[in-house]
Image 1 (tube, rainbow, N blue to C red):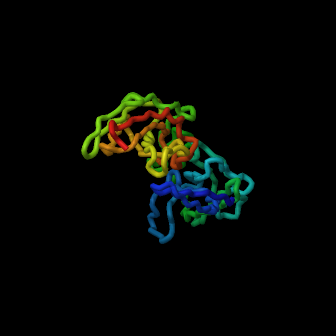
Image 2 (image 1 turned 60 degrees about the horizontal axis):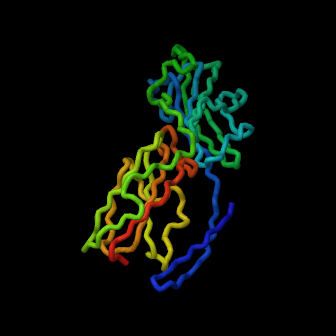
Image 3 (image 1 turned 120 degrees about the vertical axis):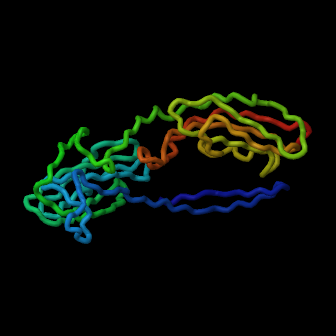
Length: 286
């Protein structure tokens, strides 16, 4: 997809210059890693063998897609077990936001070394294939394929809490009150911003704006996104403002957890509703 954006730069005299930048947005293929349930190191230490598994082998894949609206194209996603059998369709075993787990079990008829391939294609046509070389031997006991099975800790699905209803509500701002006037000072004035916590939020975006700093008589961030600003994990932020500086204002937006093993990708719909703006001025300031 091709889109574009106009960027306008102002100087302190009100002069401005606008340029247009073309932007090409390309689809990113699904991302995943392969592992095996009930696996053990190769006792023969054969080069290239990733794992030794029982005759009934269970493949586990952690799947994610950076596209917040992308989904799996099941018609073009499959597992090739490497033994000449029919390809297996892909089924998502568990989902948490854009992160999912794929689990599939296959019974091999004979011992041997096999190359197993998983191909995932999303609904925008992005495709990726990963392979794993396994040695299949008899005598290993396969665990039951359920959530209580004997799963290697490295393959265990993380205990991911459910995301709260989105979007998160706007934080309730505490201090300073809107319209407060700070006395003029030489140097910088420390101002501590505070707000109430929002249930389900892991961090907050605090945006501090400046009046007339980039163009006369306008706020700098009138068109800011909800999740613009400094990232704060607590519920306070101390800023330093010029002691004879221009008027300022601030707002806070809550955000749900992301960028971890439960929700590896962050998207705009995880941003909450921004709070109202609160303004402040410096007595005798610009």
